[in-house]
Every structure is written in structure tokens, then in C-alpha cells.
Length: 96
Image (tube, rainbow, N blue to C red; front, side, top):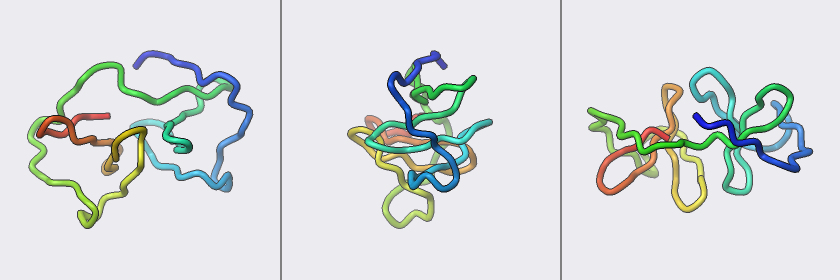
């Protein structure tokens, strides 16, 4: 993942900050204003994919009643489970 610092981010995310959070791999992401941020070495980074990665063998169809957490992310919805974020892309699911 490319290290993209979120500039001018004075807000301190945490358990009681009011923003949605979820475990993403080895860290916690915080969602607000369509951005997903993670803490990194005392500052906040955008937690965005840097390449197109298809989630292979993903037969489950995410949707409003699938049981997985949905997070609005820019112009789409990510579905979160097992430390992964999935986004629908051209008929398949991407790792996001």
C-alpha cells in the first residue's frame, strides 16, 4: 500500500470519536466524509487500495441484507468481513 498521508487532519480518531470504525487487516480504519483513514506513526493516512485486486473465489453476494457491515466509501459501498473490505467492480468483488 502506498503511504498517502491525509494532510490537515487534526481530528483524533478513537473509540469514542463518533466515526464508524472497523478492523482492517492489522489496523483499525475510521470512516468519515467518504474517506477511510488509519493511524500511522503519529499521523493519519488514507487507507486506499493502490492497485486493482480481484477477490478470487468470492461467491457470496453482498447487499443490504447479507449480514456484513456496509460502509459508504466515496462513490460506492464497501462490505466488511474477516478483516477485508470488498467493493463491487464490473461484476466481481475487489479487495479494497
